[in-house]
Amino acid sequence: MTRTRRPAARAGALAVAAAGQGTLLVAAGLLITHPPAGWWDPGENGATSWLAAHRTAALTTGSEWLSALAFTPAIVTATALAVVVLLLLRRPRPAALLAGAVALQAALFVTAAHLVDRARPDVDRLDGALPTSSFPSGHVGAATALYGGLGLLVLRSARGRWRVVVCALLWTVPVLVAASRLYRGMHHPTDVLAGALNGAAALWAVSRAVAAPARPPARPAAAPRGPVALVHNPVGVDDALLARLSAAVTAHGHRPPLLLPAAAEDGGRAAAARAVADGARLVAACGGDGTVTACAEALAGTDTALLVVPCGTGNLLARNLGLSTDPVEALTAALAGRPRRIDLMHAEGDGLPARAAATMAGMGLDAAVMAATDQGLKRRLGWPAYLLGAAGHLTDRRFVLTVSVDGAAPVRRQVRTAVVGNVGTLQGGVRLLPDAAPDDGQLDLVLVQPYGPRGWAGTVLALLTGARRPGPAAPLEHFRGRRIELTADRPHPRQCDGDPVGDGRTLVLTVRPAALLVQLPHPAGEETAPRQDAGHDAARDAARDAARDALPAARTGAGQEVA
Image (cartoon, rainbow, N blue to C red; front, top):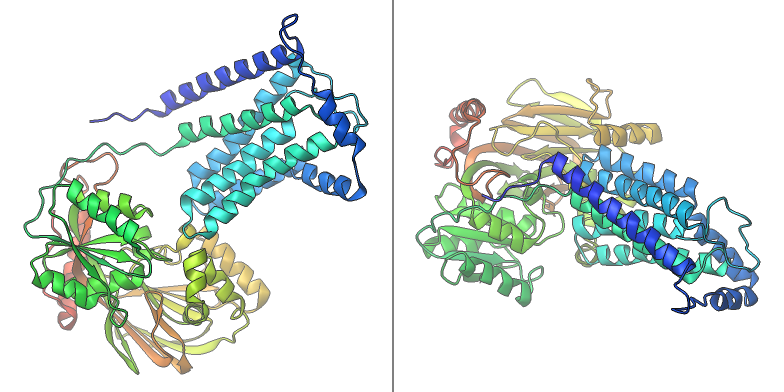
């Protein structure tokens, strides 16, 4: 088994890297300022003098704004805000990356500036006499660590083509800051180059130290009898990605997979049913949540396992199951994993034919946003396209909703939206339904009922912090049960797994316990050893069995969880 480094070893490695980086930075500065006799003449005054001689009012104003982005107060404020937001989103490693990289480059900058003590260019300096020496540029180093780190996080964690654009814009900031520092006569060219390298090296060293421990390589599970089928959405999966997915299947010891495109009219349900009929024991749903749900509906109650391969916009089920957002990585890890039973939801309502749902279904604002978001924009931007769709619906009026849970006495509320979930986490790690789990035999309901700007502020705060305030006056009110009935005073938009399903007054969700067999990667630190949380599993299985007994009509014939 591959060993992962302990925290003490990571800290030691970071200290060694920092010491080496500081030594190289100081050595480079001394070589530039005190070159061996006759070896070279840096000759950098020409560049700064030329820039000083060609200043204009517009360029001077622009350089002032760009330099302000990297002044110490701006860097400290921006870093603190980013760290707080990341911690509220339960992203401690990215928060540590930003804070650590900015702090490390600052410490090395101060040390090198003191030891090298290089004079600033002999030109009219627009920022006056600063207390530190010219080498290296602290502005450029801080901008590289902060804005470069933000770009790296966007590139790693977001999906859609927009992330490349945002990353490029963030990575452009240090370059513009470097140009502004040269223009304002505050640094020599080698100063800004050293600053950029200092920030980039600090970012690299800290990213290595805070990276998640690598999973030990899992022994490939015995290949099930029968072929593997790839049910793919032709809109979201191009030929190149399909070829990579197929190669991942064959590299794992399977025969070349069945390639079954999902039909637009059913999202892939017929293709998944055909795969089962052809004897497939593993069916990979390659698409968004709509494709995944269509395949899940076809596989529910069978012994054919579903592999979730996220290739869509939201990918909620994949995120809640802890899968990689990279399609090939998710498929490779699942092929080496083990099967596990999870619940599904049975959805119905007025004018809504009975259908399955795997993640969330709702009525009101969320469904209106789903319907208003342009499909092309979703493909280009990913899930942030929903934020644009939401802008036109934040002022929608509240409506009267009657809620009945497991046949109990109904309650009436005025809400913006109601969301029922089999899972609880939205994009960005926001826990909309904190108690939801995909295998507990229960459904979770949240009523979002803010009133006015103050109510919306309380709603956002509750979502980010997970704080709860009981009672109907709370901006978020939670319920749990096996059957949840929503009845509105008039027709409202409805959605199932992010797909608009038409306006209506009623939406009824019933849990289908252990209905679906999914193939999931082994947890980190585990290969094929038996699970140790037997007490938790026993309690969960008992609850699920009780839910199954209480709902014979919803039973799909699924058995117990496969160990």
